[in-house]
Image (cartoon, rainbow, N blue to C red; front, side):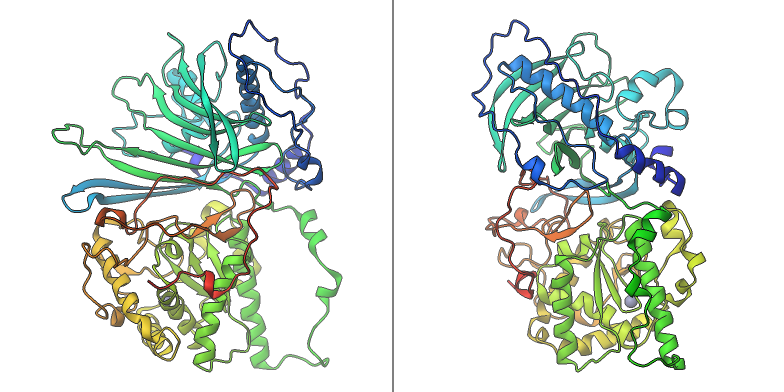
Length: 600
Ligand SMILES: [Zn+2]
């Protein structure tokens, strides 16, 4: 399973950046001959992507596509173009090792709620997008051809549970043989995905073109003809094996390229009399394409001269207490920087402003005056967790997603604020820089912020006190309801409740975080459509897979019409609103608590 290990070293990273900065000079400049095509291409306005020049491409991004290519005039030319672009994409990303997360829920039929989670699985790793994807370790010699094609291997997938690699197959349609010799392409229609006009093609493997070929549909945008979405499966499946169905989405995060970002997979038939009991749904997210390198030169350029200067007003030595605080600050900075570099923490951004507003509401109403301000950061992963290091509160993307309202967010944050107020500082050992010297793959082994039970109890007690003095005091019923919903699903969602850095919210299937609030509020009632105790995953925070920035999802409220619409803590399909790189997004409203989860 070498591919999925967190596998790269500082040295490798340095070479990654060098290669990535070379221009893609081998872009073919000649158009493929227009074969006797019968179909006519749509009348595409030959508008050159003028934005490409204006946009300042990130220095580490692959070179932009030359926009000088003539527009295709036949569907055959369109096919040639997106095949060519697909190969260009593979080349452009071949030096990348993004973070890949798959969260999977097995499903069982509930008479009232429909398919509901019966168990869950979680995978987190680093995917090597290079040509020789670990064929030595991962691939079986006799199956080399097919396994390479699928960017790794399938090892009788069905039998060996869920191998995470399986869900990354559809980052590309076909790793090695995506061409006319192996596939037939049929134009279907034009269609908008979000703001992007696409040409839709069905893709069928030719007869005897081998096992495990892509079969399904692709959407190619009509400007540079990059594939932006793939939907289908692989066929034929070898004996005793099974290919999942997948829906794979790409985002235009850098000029000229659409990079794989989301893959949704689902299996299961809940109609009467079905024998195949396998049923699950899974979300795979890819991010960290542009993770910073452990490059010494890089660091030097970032040091500002004035930052060396002591900022204290008078030139005096630190008092023992000041020294202690500086020491803790150093530890905090070390940890935050290290987690960010490992691709686990979003850089400071809009979501933090919302979180800080909520923290501030708690602080002001409780007259909390700390020597250093409390900061917040978003952990990029799905499992529900929070922790604090020094004065920084960290909360996971998954947890923000499922919280139904601002009061519940305040409750979750209040526990960590309580640790800070009570001085439960765990991190000071990380002020020693040698403790930061570990590979990204071993982050979870080297960092940890779990408190002893006594501190947990004290923090919960203090948290309730903080909440009762806060503007959220009147809305703690919602918090109670959220905790009840979490308890109701806890036995089935062990993986989602398994924390990796902070204290778990549950022990042996019982939610123990903020237990004092769990009896508050009305009883959990699935049939009450206006009672939304917890949300599905993915509804609040979205991550930019290139630079890891987190922002709040902008969605219009959708009416819940049946108990099955609630889907608390559940995995749902992806439907990102596609937009071209640099396209002006609807004016972003300034981050305030008003953007935070609202009450209901
Ligand atoms: Zn705690």
